Image (tube, rainbow, N blue to C red; front, side):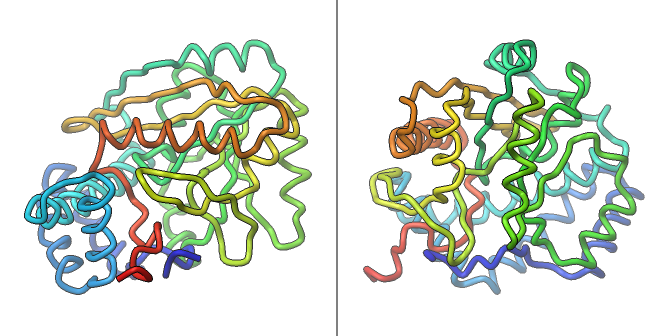
Length: 295
């Protein structure tokens, strides 16, 4: 795999507890300020991630060397703010945030038709918190998210203990492949199933496609499943805007039945579009394009 990514984020349970205590005691703005100090630590002690993120800005976005160096810090800071927002929103501070939408009528249509559908997002923005906003509009029990749930177990249990009840359903990927039956069941019942289409686990099957000027590997599963089922597919993103604002985007895929490669190509083009609008919100901090091999 083009990565050292092992399915787990960095950080310790104690670190999470201290930061969340600071957030809940002093507020979101104070947490953002503290985050600037925390990010300095990651810049100093994450050489591989720094190099991969620098390469993304330099080679994929085409920025100058100096601008790419500065943007490494900006990217980490943006990512830290999305994590802060996730904690704040999931622990009762949803009313401190606003959002707008572009293309939400496509989601409306799928839920109204009650025929099922597939949503494909990525490790950009903060789609995992979108359900706290969409609950104002839908019954979120009709939407399921496929996840590896690969966070550190103690951190995951702690977050579940302090978060409000989530109405979004999670389908956990399992080695015995039983999650496939859960996915089909959700779709058969007229629900929408959300996949992240840009990251795969070691040993899984992949498809290759040109992405931002170079070939990269993507998980085969979402594209193969969607193309074989011939289901409606939307590309969806929930991107952080200025201050405490988010923007939801939904776009309809126009692929042919049983054409997984064609669907993947549409997805990469869609991701390129969103990353041109939000270049700091590419949160795959590993050697996504295998650039180190060339070096």
